[in-house]
Length: 128
Image (tube, rainbow, N blue to C red; front, side, top):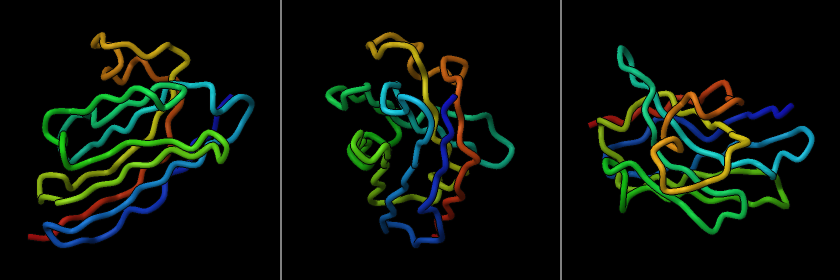
């Protein structure tokens, strides 16, 4: 069992930056592929970024590529999402997720159903 807890959300002006954190606890919490998803009001949950267990491989949604960076510190059991140049369309509840599947370039890494563990979410609000 893995427990995930996000933090770092808040209100920021367009063009600003935020760093989200996701603390993991539980047995072998570092041994999971992890990802960030987001869900805006009235919309479906969408993929943002994914990182392999070692942190060596990452992938991003086209909408955030070049602006967001996913990283992890396995010694601290913590996942991060650095978000720069935020836009109003980035406003959403951001969730971290963990999967026992192995990272690859296949589409399943961006599918929410591939992830067994989820945090409670943290709100990111971007004012224009």
